[in-house]
Length: 306
Ligand SMILES: Nc1ncnc2c1ncn2[C@@H]1O[C@H](COP(=O)(O)OP(=O)(O)OP(=O)(O)O)[C@@H](O)[C@H]1O
Image (cartoon, rainbow, N blue to C red):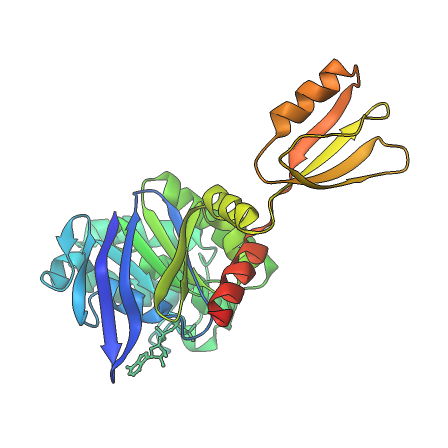
């Protein structure tokens, strides 16, 4: 579990991370979203204990990172954007090296390393890592982030160099990892990626948290923030006009078997009721959900104009 309490980092009088309060429950696949310079990397570096906060604190499994950096390192797996390995060693040898740093004994290493190589699809590859493609290095980075069986893995732009098969594998791996109770924190500005894998997200802009919550929370908030809730209605016979006072606008198709209504609140039940009373069979009544990308753009837009 991750908790940030008023986490702040100031560089040269400017807050790179500004009073960030956040709680991420175990087993969540959590997206840290924001444009370049939003403060994602600075937040991550504080979470893994590589830099100290100017004020505030962050906790991993209840342990304050800045005060117990070594203990916290044993609970975290971290994959930076540019993964670095020993170029003249094989994948197995690189993992062996990392496992020894974590103090894993020979029996543990013999079991864990082949399992991880197979998980990321690098088993049976004997060549030195210097000859790897970027995508292969990223797969190995994921294996290394998992070497110490961490309770939290932090992945910085994890799919930047992956081909479609690599992205599909990555999704499967982090899905399985989260199912096993490991919390996954993914920093990215590739929204479609976060949209697909994350169960919840925080949106940062200029160091500040502008929104956080589950995908439904975020998309719901955005729907309400705009002019209202858009509802699509389809029926099997022509529908009557709706006169609900919450309706802001209504567009009907020529056949009157389709309509798009924008209302101040979610009036789907009232619409269903009205159709039932008019004996009009309903095909579907759905609220339009913007995807996370639209949501994010709406938050960035607000931030840019503020
Ligand atoms: N060591 C540093 N010294 C001074 N300023 C810094 C330092 N590290 C980061 N910053 C500044 O803090 C702000 C946040 O940077 P950060 O790298 O955390 O953003 P980011 O969201 O990770 O962006 P990116 O996706 O580009 O890495 C930026 O304005 C950056 O210039």
